[in-house]
Every structure is written in C-alpha cells, then in structure tokens.
Image (cartoon, rainbow, N blue to C red; front, side, top):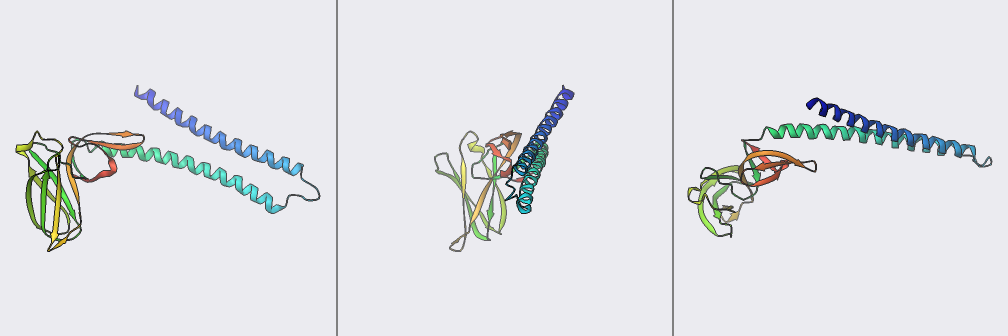
Length: 215
C-alpha cells in the first residue's frame, strides 16, 4: 500500500510538471508563430523596427521565466508543508503556551503566564466564571518585565467550564501593558486547507502559528 501511494504521488507530480512544461512550450510556440506571421505580413514601407522585436522577445522570455519560478515555488511550498507537518507531530503529548485568557484545568490545576512590557510593583490575577464574575483573585507581587508564569489551584472548580482570567499590572499609579497566555496539552495535529492546526486538550483547535512556547 505504501509503495503504491509513493508511486502514485510521484506520477502525479511528474504529470503536473509535464503539463506545466507543455503549457509553457505551447505559449512560446504560439508567440513565435504570431511573430513570424507579423514579420511576413508587415508593411514594407513601415517595417517592424528592432526595438519592437526585441521588446516582444523579452516579453515572452519574461513570461516563460515567471512560469518556471512559479513551478519552483510551488514545489518548495509543498516541501515546507511536509516539513512543518513532521515537526508538528513532535508536539503531541507536550504542553504549549498560546496567547489568550481561557483556562484549561488538568489534574486540578490551571497554568498561564503574563508578558509584561515593563517591571510591575503589583500583578493581580482574577479568575473569572463563564459569566465574567470574579471567582478568586491572587497577587503575584512585584515582577520584572518579560514572561512570568503562574499556576492556579483549581481543585474546587474541576467541573467548571468556560473559565478565564484577567491580569491587572501596575507600577505605582501607572498601568503596565501586558499580554496574557494560557498553557494546555497538545493531543493531536492536523491541517485544514493547507493550514496547520494544533488540537489542545482543553482549548480545542488553534493555529500552529499561535504557539508561543513549548514545554
């Protein structure tokens, strides 16, 4: 079965390349025939000058080169997609960080992080219900700039759904800008219309490019 698939894929690729090559050859052939007809039927008193002929020859050369470049880029894109799929498969079973504020509870715990643009004197995390009500709050204290992880003990909320969190970071009376991230486990990888997708245990499908950290 494997051998048949490989041969089929190779045949398909060869056929596609051959078809593209034939199309390019036909375009050049049509152009040359039109050019010869134009030369044969030109006005003797007003012949086609060298500049015009050179310009037309350059145009067909450019078109042919572009078609070849497109074929090369198409092949390269296919190779890159295959490499990305292979790399993505190594994520299965591992934890990743993605931007967002939805919480994924596993084994009575939920983990996240906050990216601080500047140092903060006080960083407070509010755990929110599905309806947006504050269920719990805890202070992470003073933190330096950069990514700062945290973990929440969710033993009493293991059956809750739709939980999220928000972060309030301040330095004195100034609000420190930041971004929130959540941690979850990868259970599978796949693709949709050529885009790589990562299936997370608690948060569902996200794009492969949404992954910010891997553990």
